[in-house]
Image (cartoon, rainbow, N blue to C red):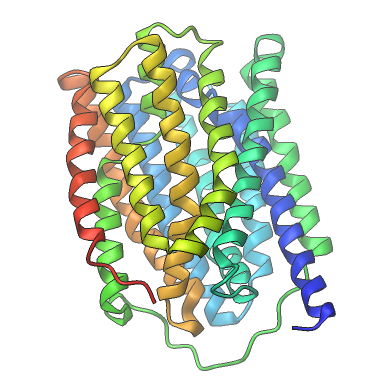
Length: 383
């Protein structure tokens, strides 16, 4: 690749990373306090919280698949990216004016529909990368996500008690609107061939990608949303103003580990890093079940950050590499759809287990599914 091509690639990576950083600043100004807002301010129980979170994850899956499919069909990426950020900004204004938990639902669905940007954005990044640097570049993008989240959490910690939830959520819309402007002004639509598009179906996945999709779905069924970790800590004795600090801790750890995890995956392979990520989730479950002390919960959030930082960039890298070349966005979207649809009952089921039995039961359930997924991963072959 010539120098102009390298400079163009760097500009794309920088633009996508800065936009992602800005959006996550606003996103985590909201989501660092989201479980407390839904349960303490609007009066929802754990099953309702799980239902709302699960519905959001289901919409993520559908919007991701739609975004990937249409993006490949029309050979466009950019419009899906900035539209996704716009949805996120609008939804936060809706959260600010919600007076009861049912009002949250349409705005939560709009917010998570913003994930229509995910597969097209990942496809852009995959298209300009190769086997030697793809993991690193996905790691950089994920690190910027997480560092944006760190900034958003810090803003929430320092401003929540002063300005309240409503004003905090209104302020959180601004970074996403800035991300929209950044994509529209500075990112050029990549040139793509006009190959005939017929769409991607699950039967078009090769055997390795099918197995990876199935085992990831099994893992997702037990991988409930972070809201349960937050409420667990709050119920255990962490004060309301301390809870965002725990969220900050896991996000900071994820931000720090994302780039090294991507580089390590480029060096030793994707599967080995995925094994490590599953181990960290299992360690979290064991810690919350058997060592639920003040220090134990802090350690559990560190494990959660290590899990997220290792899982997300490496899993996307592996899916992109197993995908048919002309259908990268569609394949990533289809993969995310399966995972998201499974995640919908996951959080709701975790909430029912929590309310019907005790807070430890969801962790036992998740630990069992993690072991099954780990065993299945041995049989996936990388390209």
